[in-house]
Image 1 (tube, rainbow, N blue to C red):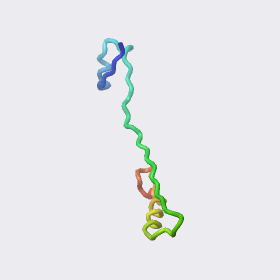
Image 2 (image 1 turned 180 degrees about the vertical axis):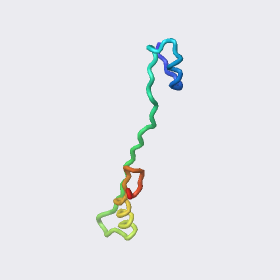
Image 3 (image 1 turned 90 degrees about the vertical axis):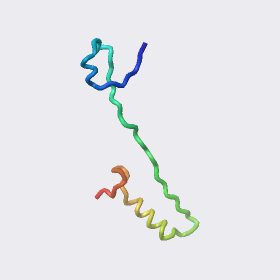
Image 4 (image 1 turned 30 degrees about the horizontal axis):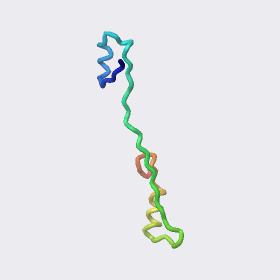
Length: 69
C-alpha cells in the first residue's frame, strides 16, 4: 500500500529502506491572472479611462506589476 508523508529531507538519510522512498519537492502554485480594461467604442474615452489604460500599458506584470525601471 502506497502512502504519502511530509518529512524533512534528513529523514531520507535515516531510512532503513531508502530505495522504497521517493522525494518530490513541494513548490508553490503558479498564479495566473488576466487583467482586462474594457472601454466602450461607442463614445470617446474619458480622461480617467485614457490615463488608466496608459498606466496599465506601461506596467510589466511579468515582474510583479512594477514598471520595469
